[in-house]
Image (tube, rainbow, N blue to C red; front, side):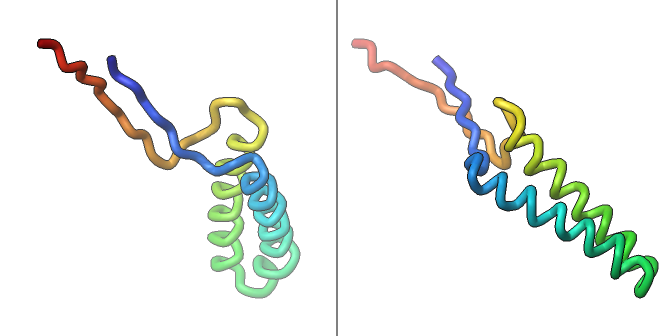
Length: 78
């Protein structure tokens, strides 16, 4: 029998990181883009990707896992 185990962050950790990534997006929009232009745009893109990742883990049941472990159960038959 083959089992697939998925490792993903908890709902609590996903919630904290979701809120922090929203703050990072706001920081990028209101401070970094007007001041540093290209760096601010890159910052917003990265923060948005992080926000989507943690948002999916927070608001959906399945979420996105970082690691998947496949395990084969071999029964000793004699």
